[in-house]
Length: 161
Image 1: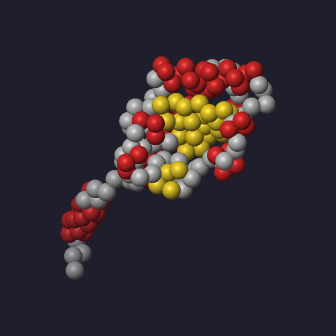
Image 2: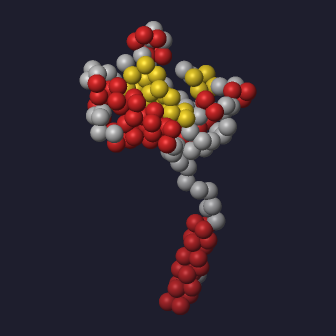
Image 3: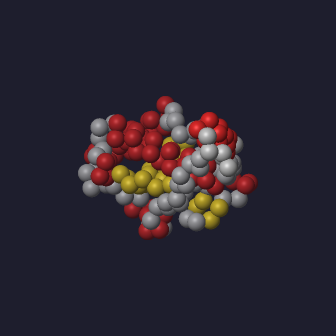
């Protein structure tokens, strides 16, 4: 067993390098936090048509950026809310089935949050009047079949009620 100071230092250096090598070989990237499914209340999605006014903000594939047409839709919804102070908005972000469930859940949340921020930016709506939900590629818990991968699924819906 080494007892000289030089031998102990060499053992300590070898141990340190071994420890560093073990840490360096761990190349697994950290996992992003999962975004849970957050659907709108069933009462909203099953309400009679005369009780909810729906607006649709469409998005490009994989994007949560609102284009000029989407900003016009948001402004129309905010305008109606400003003339009817009792109206509340439920914003529901959605995606098509392209991508994984986890990716789509994050993207649909980001779309809903983008529309919420746009509603607030109009200055016509307060935060307490906006509820934000997201469904990914699901509709009330069911996954959307792959043949429904169309532009109308890449949206955030604004339900005024």
